[in-house]
Image 1 (cartoon, rainbow, N blue to C red):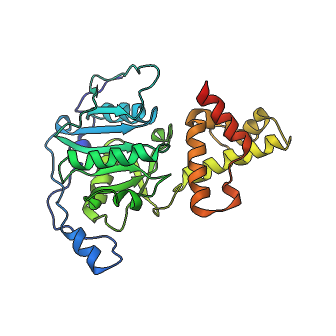
Image 2: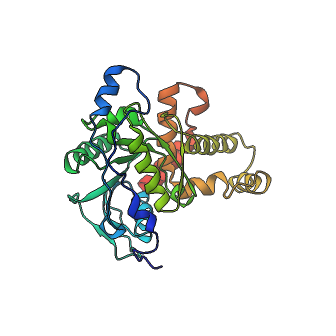
Length: 293
């Protein structure tokens, strides 16, 4: 796979020209005033000058790094916990480093399971990067609004629907907050466009759209096994052939990671207190067994 910086000129335009920052949504005049004081994004000259910093959980960190590097970005990355096996990256434009480069243009925070680690990452990122650099943070287990309360630069954080394998899809869900000015949303759109993705703006809610639906289907499939309705193989076949799913729920759960599925369901159940999101004991056991292994 070639990574040349000339592959996608759209990467050069990810940072917006200076403009007066206005709030897209505001619950009060006070919030609007706070947003209006946010520094404006600045434009970089070439993809090779645009550096992305990615931190969070494996394998999302590796997956996003490969996509960004392929489309001409210089990528620095680190993990909350290093993978047991050091990944072999296809691109020479990826560097493993716990230090956030001073010239970072955009940061991706990809943590769903460990909220304490996520908060520490967000706080460190906010202190390390320029005021004009946005933070795109997975918000399927903690809302973007809650995350923005952890930092002074509330205007810069936008929620992102991130689960392992989802970066391969052509669409990315994003969730702005009441603090998100239109310029930050435009920078986010241009960034994803530069790596070949379209965005869909959704409400800032736990689970967002696809992760919520997908994890619930996986959970329901686990209930079907517990009730001896069908085998895992039969359920996978039924949804692949009958509903045209790309994978069956258990095959998809293996790719996403059972611990990720459990984290999303636990966050949904805690947020909504609804029985439909209660995690089946079988799924909990499967996730625990896989983690211990």
